[in-house]
Length: 231
Length: 121
Image (cartoon, rainbow over all chains, first blue to last red; front, side):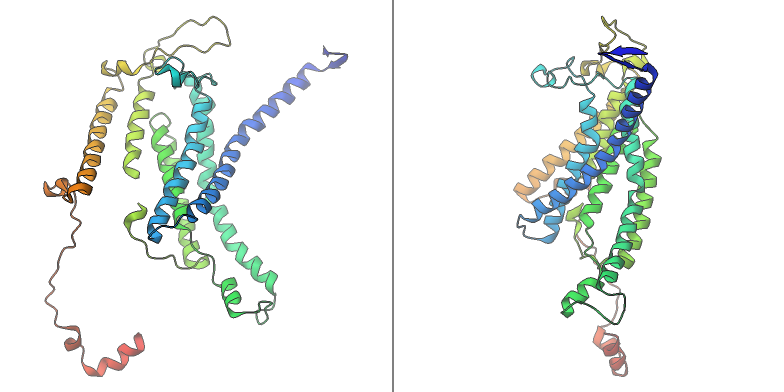
């Protein structure tokens, strides 16, 4: 027991409470990054879609690059910069602003503190395709059920609305492609120091392939034919 | 876009593999427990032979390749001639013409298959 102001507080209780809070907040970072990525994706797609491009492929290519860069900075760079201290290096007028963290280099502690978080994010990211698949599978059924439980009846007042309900959504290939690029770049960037990222990336790409194949075959409209500008 | 991924891997990989604390057991004293230890790790040490030297050489080679590609793209945009393609360093963009020696479509299909073809389409 120790005295905090006029109160007597159990030392171990405070210690374990703080420890649990820091652990929960630490683990939440991965989820926050993924959630923020989703928001960024949606925002960037809306912003770039408002620009008029000559071809659909050009627009999709711009969206892919925009979404990828935002995601990559958010997943791979923010954690690195927040924990970095680069005051040792030149040019000083830039590096003096990067001193919030404790790591001046990729020291052993960096791998457990920051590397672990990046790996955790990538592992959570690798099972995300199944969540996307579940949403793509359940959402149209819920919408149809909300319309009518009887397959011979509908509340829709026009054929176009009825077709829209039953024909599936547009397949957003640029959305998926940006995600693949993000996984590859993060893995390549930290892979030499953290080789575990390579099997995690392979697992992620396998899951993505399986889920996207099912989604394209059963739940979405056939995607438009695209040229090689997307790559 | 993907061509820059190996560059990132080599550059960051070089920095990870040339860490003095892990590979040379280098350490610096700190004044307080809360201070972070100096790394003593600088780009100017790149020419010193160590565990990261092969990665450094690959990085230099990759940077050179990227520069060649960028210069080639710029001059292609200006002069409309792809020098790398001319010298045989890249795959051709032209479609390969294949002559399968097939007869004219309308001559090779007999009239009796006309109904089948119409139904199929």
